[in-house]
Amino acid sequence: MVMAPAKILVVDDDPAVRNLIQRFLIKQNYQVEAAEDGKTALTLFEQFNPDLVILDVNLPDVTGFNLCQEMQSRNGVFVLMLTSRADEADKIRGFAKGADDYLTKPFGLGELEVRVGAILRRQRVITTAEQKRLVFEKLMIDPVRREVALNNQAVPLTALEFDLLHFLASHPGRVWRRAELIQEVWDYEYVGDQRVVDVHIGQIRKKIEIDASQPALIQTVRGVGYKFESPAHPQHLEAKS
Image (tube, rainbow, N blue to C red; front, side, top):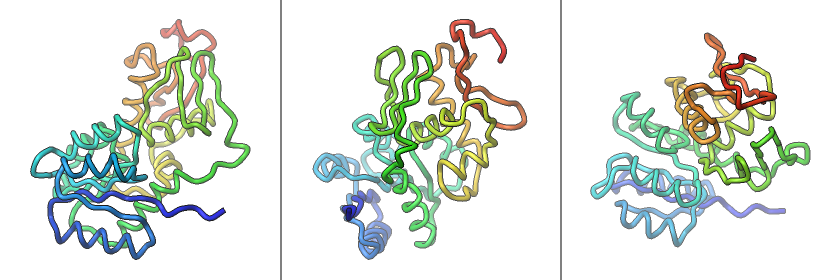
């Protein structure tokens, strides 16, 4: 089966950057639309239904952070954010708003190609072995529909949050270092602050834990990383595994 080319929306108020990215991605056989501001971007977003949005942080009418959150709330689209600032705090804020990845200007087109490819590979057709629903008492993870439910109520997760939760839950009890999670879930060697993992774990915990300050499902292993556990009696949060 021939896969249709992925659709990418480029949002940047700098025409030189916007046109460069658009031309480059078209050469890579992607379907590409471009917008110079948030209003145009949202209109195109509704019409084009992109698989990925490449989004500049600084736009004339809205912040990229808010636009990212707005788009994520609609359909969990993948978002790659662009910034001219190398401030790690900006990156952490972007990830907290639902961004999947970050590029700091100036960047090479080769790096852009790697990041885009890694993000879109999350849409791959999953194998039969991976199609099994994961059920942990009141938590259900469906990798085919990419849906999560808690107490039979849908849990809204971003694309990356789903991938991270599904990966951890697929290996219950195993402890993963942050660098390993980045390699497995982001799908490439991430160069930067590994706190991005902590941010995403924190966001997931807010959505699936009874008490995010005393997580029972995704547990922190101090000095190492994280593991997914399914406690026999999750209401007893004070119990140690």
